[in-house]
Length: 253
Image 1 (cartoon, rainbow, N blue to C red):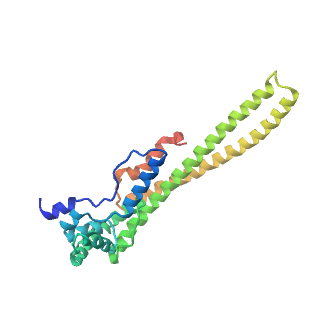
Image 2 (cartoon, one colour; image 1 turned 45 degrees about the vertical axis):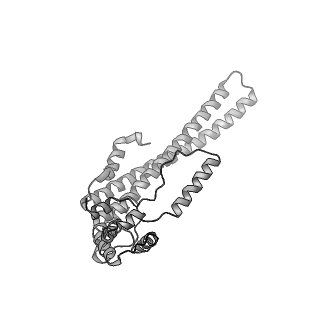
């Protein structure tokens, strides 16, 4: 394996090892504090990566991930203690090559669709191409989030309705019970009226949320249709979302 290929395989991840976290106690506090310190002091490149560095490759990787040029300063700091100085020219050339991939309209769609952060690294014609895809991906993402928000609202409403129906049935049973006193029946009757009124309002709210849901689902279908028409493929099932939800029908609630 040549040096450049080896460099590509090196990981720059700062993620701490997986832990089985205790739910409480001093051990949890110590582990969390240790993890925080580890992340604060994490270098962008390890000693081995600095020693084997191909700065064109590192720049290309950073560019293809949409990282700003300022990341080179962090690489410089990480490698300085190992006596390694970054090749700024090679890094810049590699990063510019990586940006050619990152700033495509298809990647722009992916970044917007995944709600990933865009750091404003694309310039010139590449910027317009990237942003066209980014806006389209954002549109689909936002509509999907709106669908799920309504789904959660309707689920909460159904839960409230079920609980209220249970309370209503309990008061009706109390009113009809031979063991209830006149005062009990009078109180139960008052509560029945109160619960029926609240239930009527919740039923209306649920019905209106169904109308909103149908509207948002239609807008999601239109957004995914525009994405498909623009050539964005159904990668990872993203554009399958609408069809899945539509097929669920009443079970969507």
